[in-house]
Image 1 (cartoon, rainbow, N blue to C red):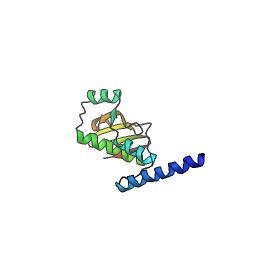
Image 2: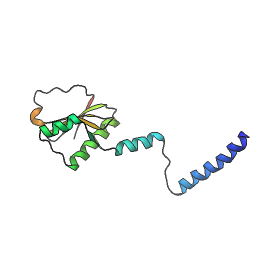
Image 3: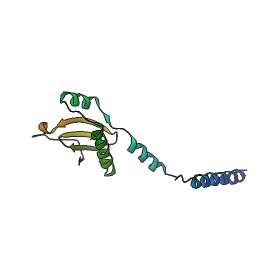
Image 4: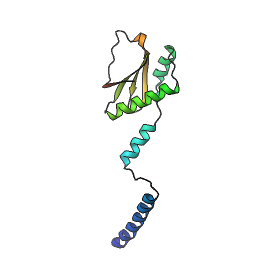
Length: 124
């Protein structure tokens, strides 16, 4: 009975595969789909980061947020877990895995600063 079931399923799977291929739809592995979802995930800001942005009068436009997102993607491709992102006159520490900005500072605040708990940096 198992043999009958498996021979019945295989042609159906083959038909689905042929239908997908004929429509030009590319089959992707789970890892590829997961990477795509992660790449399209929006940048988040922790409560602490939002407080720092407000207290330090740091404003971000949509172009800058997109640059941060791209920096996080680059960091992820290099295997970085916690990154320092330097962009123009602004600096951010971020969790790459969670695509979350942890804190933010301006260039004026960086003199004599030490950044800990990072394993990489992206300069954009």
